[in-house]
Length: 605
Image (cartoon, rainbow, N blue to C red; front, side, top):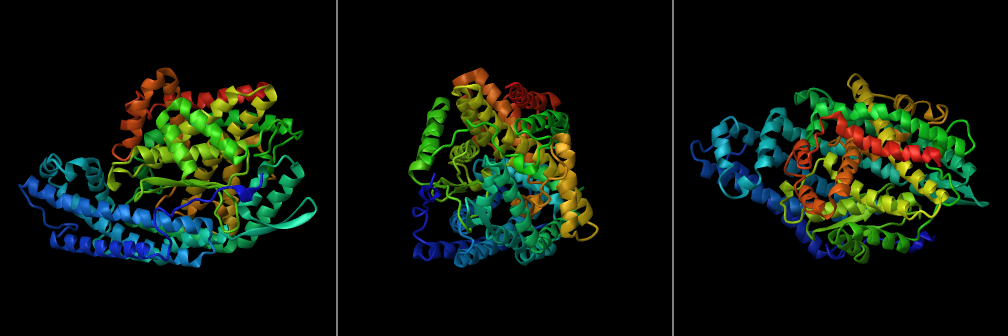
């Protein structure tokens, strides 16, 4: 497969170019709208302890609605602008013009966040009069339509510092935590490595080098692993500084805002409680030995005593099929069509209208993601397609995210934000559809083995590796609260977490001590513990798929309604619509059991 034939995404229907008049006018419109909202907040004395129209629910609802209408419009515009610019930055980090524009948009986003904090403080003041507050939420209009958002904001107002402190924290983030986050993205995306293959040395982007981890040649995999570690070794100091900067800032703000610990805010963001997290993680811990058996069996199939890190993604069957991009497209469309016409139609639009950027190249970030472009009610998908089943599965996964975005069309921007726990629902189900379809069509045990291998590679990442990342991040927060950590400290904590999660399934001499350096999840100042929600998403998605198998087409309306509502209820409430109790270990055990069944089948092939 020639990677030069892979598609790049097209955003010309959003704005003609970064230099176009339409783009510049949109930025100016954003600035003017922010000014208007500032004036409105001042006129209505919307601030912590500000005026409240007592005894007049309609007047209160009108004041609330004035804010909601303005901020929804601004968030839609900003989301469109940011997605458009990030499409350039994420595929070409050498584009200094795009990076500068992204920085400017982040400054505008800080103003939006500062306004939201100001409103949150005020709505907390309003909620101190619960009868008045609830009466206002019953008045027909925007306030009633955003009742969940308003109650949640009132609840979260307890974690605010003073207005002056919150304003300063927002402004300092531009040159602090957000700057560290941007630097990590630039540094990691521009790493290239001279690598010898087939007698020739080529300069490989780091994402392309990492793709070699699935190459059938064991010596090539080992050399790629060693070259990757050496590359991160050269970048470790600036990346350690970035991670210290982000985690130090988060720890300080958590303490000043009265958070119980480093997990308190992530759990609120996930709209779940500790009881749910503990139930899920206890099942994960119990399920680790099954994955350890899988790792040992894989080592045996590869003719090794112990599995090394560079063998985690290795194929074990000569029958592993490779897919051209057109083949991947047709398989996904056909499979999605067996589930629902709406899902198939969405995927067809994504392929035909060039929503997907699939080619690995220098300056393009690794991994994969899907982002919404609200101004045109579309999505854009980034992946680094290499023809493997794993990348086919990833593409189906990201198209599932795009379908989730499709189901939220018609919702306002404040009704859309979805906790990561539920953000993986549609993606996991879409990925499961494709995996099961390919397994059903497997012509012989060797082909089945290859597909199961790919499935368990992914499952091992979402269950075992994610658990190691959770352990690592908890340890980082604990130690960072006392002092800065060195690059060696981060490496030691990473290895310790991997040993605990992978147990005797991996060779302890050959782990990945620099996983902390390149994973962007650790560097988000607003999304700590960007890990356990993936495990939640996978196990929840598998549980929903089991319900789909029982109900058939009758499942679809409730499923689409769930996806459209993920920004308007807590996780437990939405799960209960399907009779699921996420605080009960039994649900998680059932989903984990579905994975363990695949492991047992793998062991017997």
